Image (cartoon, rainbow, N blue to C red):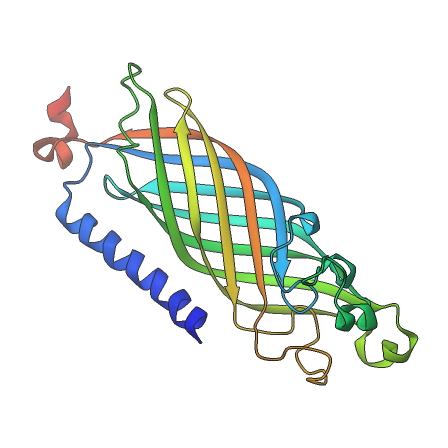
Length: 254
């Protein structure tokens, strides 16, 4: 319940902060937008992987469009695709061995996902004025928003006694709340490097098809999560706004 409340509060808080800065900060005379491509890894946390396990990371790609709306706030739309994998054999108990439950179930999961998302980014440093090349232009940032995902997974057990119940395959479409942190660096006037790690809170326990299994073999009280971490390269487009007196009469600029 606590995670649920926090995940709902994050995007609302960012939207309020973004709105406040949008109103309080003068509109930039120079607007920027970015088109970028990223590579990284997707990961899954759920019944087959109770904790985030880096050995389960699988390749992922993302494309995104980012636009500034005020000095500290940018908006980003993205499309991300990646693979998912997890296995009971990677779960470690208190003594370092596979716990008895996982030894009995012998579950493995594999599949893939596609996500379309829109987020608000809050930049802690001034990142937009990048024409001054006498200093390094970078900023850490936080982000939160809303995403729509499509996940298709297959779950398999090596325990013959459980195959009838646990061998499943299927797809799921739903809403997720992306949130996380990153660092963006302007390499020069036009190209930018980004590093990011984010979590996606879902509202289902069926990404691994185990939400309706017997409580003796699964934890039906925790919903599933997935992650994206990666590095990106983007290109900046600049737009110089006309001064107010000339905005409606461009002939005055001649």
